[in-house]
Image 1 (cartoon, one colour):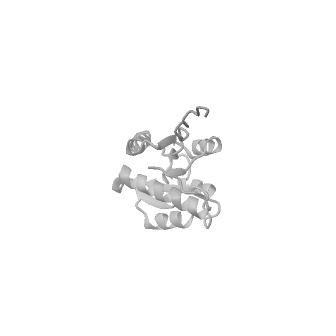
Image 2 (spheres, one colour):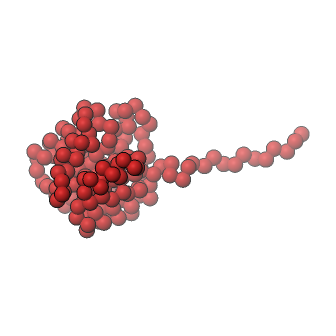
Image 3 (cartoon, helix red, strand yellow):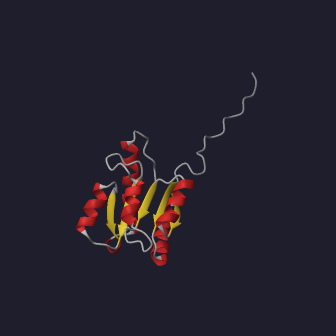
Length: 154
């Protein structure tokens, strides 16, 4: 009987469970804080950083992004307009979007959620853990709505 070497254990591709998050924030300190907080929260996060909506659009053109975390109060453009551009069909979101803003405004919150954002978080009331859970929920909700297998981001 010929000798058959044992099969090598199956291994996952290096980034099988990487969740790519695009963080759009115009304040460099806030951008660094939330980016580092997400990376420390889970090694499964790959964080792309943009300081303007235009930079965000460029990154979206060149990278597969699982979730966009967007500040509404951008100095160079409207974060709300960016949301509308990113989610043209609010009834069938194809992109997971989390609003992370300092603006405690119930009307903005309602409008954001009605126009495709999966969550509206207030920076001063949120933690990395809160953002992490919101990202996971948003990514899974969009995948489920599109009939795709949910992605593990934790």
